[in-house]
Image (tube, rainbow over all chains, first blue to last red; front, side, top):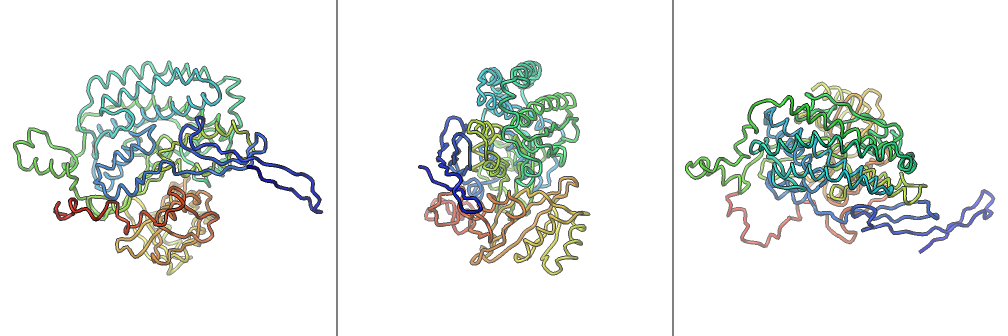
Length: 404
Length: 164
């Protein structure tokens, strides 16, 4: 499978004859952490060009959503970026709440912030430890992955699920968090800094790690913007764009945190931005717990909250609501909204058009992975194959989000 | 409200008559542009010094409720000033052609391919307009309303049974 290409000089004299070899990387290559196919044209070990093929796990979410009542779309959002499902859930709830014009109590919003920051930490743990693995440092991965497990235990305590959480409701949360949840969060906040410090010591100033990652797959700020990069990848290139600061949602304006930025946009910067974001997330969670206001856990939206069982059995009104909610017969007002949240990978947007029925007329997910993965061929041109693997894992391309 | 007026005045000045509507939907100013001028408007918005919508947040397709028209929706963003606007353009479903935005933003490439894949919108001037998420052999455009999600031959799930 090789093709001959001849380079001619101005006077049409053959100066070089080169053979490129074609390498099929993927679809299920163990080094790509997901189903990605890249047909690479190789010059020895240098990549001449890459053609990505995507869509291997396309599940037609946008079409599915057109037949589902609003509450039943939440499980679909779980499966976009499955490393940080709660952020997707919350983003979806906020989109619907915006359409309904619902006023969410501060207490519920603070709880959401805690959930979202925990899942951001989980997301960054996966990405950063996998960068370590791809440079050959398995140790960091093995040590820090237990903290992701601790975060999943917290999710499990709140909603019963670990990975695809479907956490909370449109309007807030169905119930107060249990004491055990708070204990788990407290333990996590106390112990995790030690674990993260250990991980930082292993990699951040490690000579071998730095040699592998510094200047590996760099992208300039201009190019990153023109390719609509968002999130840690854009910030690594030096643009301080963070939706939490730019368009605060869910009371993010109440918290003080810094937005880390890089300068080179290379793998090392992307790694470092994520490292620092984890520290910031920890600080946000601590602030949220400290400032936690009193009040109800959900907005006054009877259409989306199952009434207490006691009332369902004894009260006609409650029975009707129960039936309507379970059958998904709740009509949503007409309208058109776009709402975005800062997901693990950056601006995750929901563009929702409602024609007043029980299901959306059109729902489009702005999936950050899908948009910035198209810059990948440009980024890996002229670098080594092993660096291309590293670039991909540092971009944190999640197959579920890429393929919808 | 202010942003809506700023952009509307600018657009009216340069593209009088091509702006079909300008309104504020929730927190977003929304403009509907004639399909022949959409590329010029995007180019103008990107290059204008004051507005400078340098970031293409999102591009997606849609079908209107009467099922006779398709649309393309652009979300633009000016990060330093934090301006966000939405542009729409609609055209006949039998002649779904609109100019590409790939020359303005390379990011539009895959988003336009996705729109083509699901709605069959042909972006004129696109460098590589082929299916992206679905298989190449597919001969329908699945997000169009004429392709219902469930088998419509089923009788146990008729809407009237549920009072819809």
